[in-house]
Length: 555
Image (cartoon, rainbow, N blue to C red; front, side, top):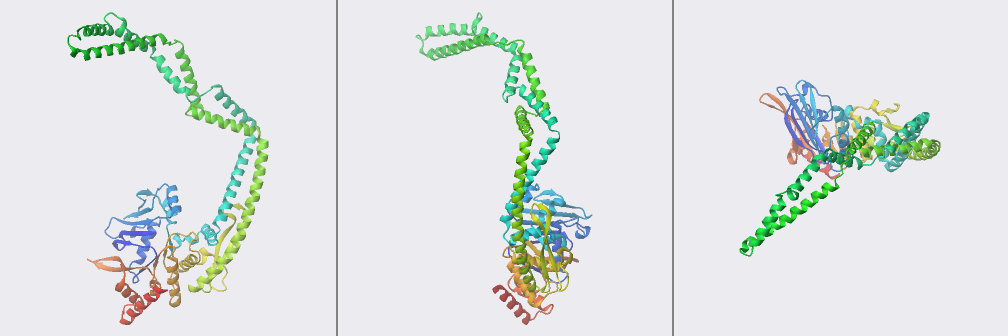
């Protein structure tokens, strides 16, 4: 849902910030007040091409920024995450246009290309009335609308799972058949590689043990020298540390009876003597046990050399080499049993084709039935929207081969005038007609996979009276399942709004600026009266405006 729109130095807008709410929001104002400029700003955020004339005269750059609430929009959040733009429940889009026409786009502060921006924003906002933003013109959307309308999502998911399994088995067979063409050569290669790794008798722990052993061998003389010197200094040489401490301990013990204060010192010297004698014993043991074979270093270096060659050839670590051998061995078994494997895969594929075909046919039957229901419901809705002569049909065309979404492709076909042939929706509808078609679809299928925010422009083009009231009532109904923003000149439409915004144009210090404000109470009544009576706002038009708002709020 669009929460906030901020526009700076854009066309005749100096700075405009507006808060939008859930429900039905209308934008009104006199012709030329700047309503279309606000839509142009939204279009820029959605990925429209930037133009130099969008920058306000005298400014260096124009900025448009919007804040969206994505609460509950898990699919939308996932799409942004997968595109490399992690989002949480809030999303900020910003577009900056420089005076020369160059522009930059940002998604939550991260620079984005238009190629990244456009497909993502299509899931946020649909601008009905501008072909370049028509969600309804995409044929893949038609299929999603039909499936949602008929509550077929569960059946579609079941079909897709079966189709994907069928595709996976097909790929396995293709891989096996490719392998069979050079089976003997591949087997020889794999067996040689596996044998080479097996002959090396690798273990994950060996390399670290060898590295530690090499370090010891490289420092053998130094280790022995240190241990021997330590033993001599502590115990074995004349005047050794232990000999000196032993003499001192004896002397202290002899005088402790004379002065008890020396008892603690005597105990400390004796304890240290015992500890150092123990160190000396351990050093002697180290010298006795040390067995640094002169030729061992060569064997360790040779083994490490082998491990490094294998790592360069196969994988960066011993663990990965062992995993690679397991993969080789599995493929060897598969190739050695290729005949059996192929038969098994062919049987599995046949079963999956039968299952997928059956599920697809069942789905096609349900879609055909749903298509007729959708067409009838939509034609009835269009009758209320001053399109009573329209015909509508859901064209289902069988595919030569099962596809990921079923056994058919789908397209909405429409005729807007009696006697005219049905044609693809993209070829016959104007902006206003597309807007009313979107409105009718949202009315009959509120959860039909369409975007959470819809901006209706031109939805009131060429209508009035009862049709205008019907449009307003249906927009209000749609706004209960999606946020609706509507630019309108008709008071019958505006009367149904939950939130009313007025766009006005003023001259300040010789410059024209556009201003947008939210109306309530008497201000809203006056704007409605202006829409009813034009420049002449009378007491009668004021009463009529109040009555229109009151009646609409109760409908």
